[in-house]
Length: 131
Image (cartoon, rainbow, N blue to C red; front, side, top):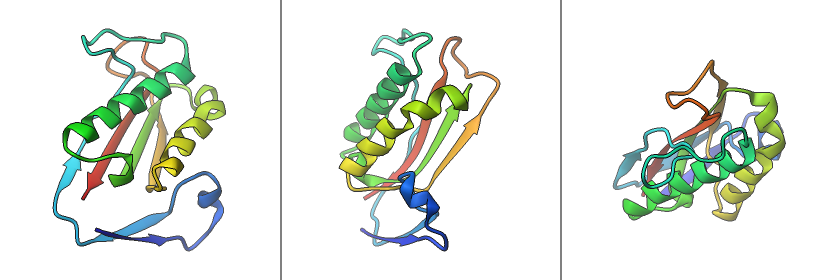
């Protein structure tokens, strides 16, 4: 797989994402459902803790990727849903750092929503990955 960043402006790179990416030569595409801070039994974790929820949501996304034989390095698209973007932004660096450690800066969209499907959850990550 070959990735070519598309950045007609450069400000997004400072936040850890590209404006776009051209992906060629991929064999498989994985569309991941939204991942929240749930334990393996489906019990919500880290109520009232955006940092804890963000970290566990990313762990859960990584688990889906791993089960498909992929890593965070395969992400080509990421959507972040948050019930309070202002509360999440101080912790966004942890997400950007993990992506940078994986060698990627996937095009990312962050949206504030009224609520998520599971009460008490404040962040959900949805990704697309290719290999």
